[in-house]
Image 1: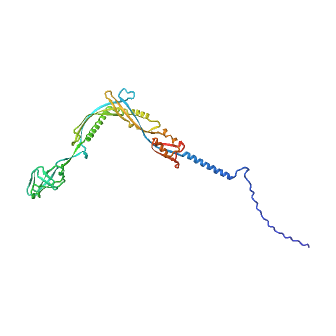
Image 2: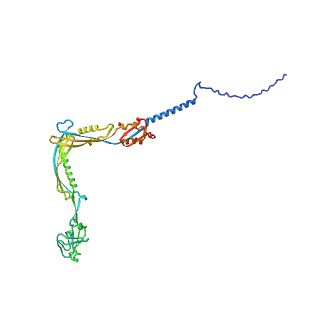
Length: 402
């Protein structure tokens, strides 16, 4: 039987090889790398940010110049006629009326220290005389009473002091002057015997006065004030009388006062408890429409305003009216009109042209305006806060005048 040949198989280790990834270039020929794109994007954002900051800066930067301006008076003066009839040209219709009033008024001098004078006199007072004797004690007029301070007084009238009783009597100082002005005290009667002096004595309960008195001296100042008071009262009464006569046809009036008579009952420097002042005055009233005067005065005032100026405030109530002349026969008067206001440079003034401040610091702006006599004080506020010079953009420069 044929023999079967056995063959032994060998196992061979097979190494598994991973396939390598194939890099495929997805860029088309001529395309830029991604890194360059990124750089371009960053650069664009940076440029946009810089432009935005510049735009914001240019749109917000500003300088506000606060100027405390020098004020210049502007005045106008003119005269105008007031007539009842035949009004023409610069004349104004009105009325001219007059009246006379007088009165006598009594005054007392002022009692201030400067107008008082010390006058020596004899002090007087009252005492209560007491008698503890068993019989009445008579005392004659001029009987001496000696105060505890040694000041001598005398009885004005004779008295009889009853036994065990008392009487009140008036006494006067033996000598004139301030020594007699004493406070309440006790008295002895030197004319009585020593024994009786202990039984008959006197006592005062109130101070004695009259040794020195203060008398008011009427000064020239007192008289002048009194005359002025009387005149003011008469003028007020006369003006009310004339207003009643004219009625409400006119809105305003000016008055002219003339003193007709003036008398004072004493001379300056005289001593007096009171004195009389007699005064008589004549008052002329000129009545007119104030609105017409104000209209003329305002027009003339603005005519005197310089180029590049403006008024701080125009107040027609400050118009001063003076009665310059009166013709009572023709019923005509002449008024002097004075009107003034304060002017300052306006923002339209060439002296405040903003172009001249470009690039200046606050101090330079102040020096320029104050040197030219336009300002008394200057303050510049910059925005943003870190800038310190006026920007070159003229429309970003603002001026505020006060």
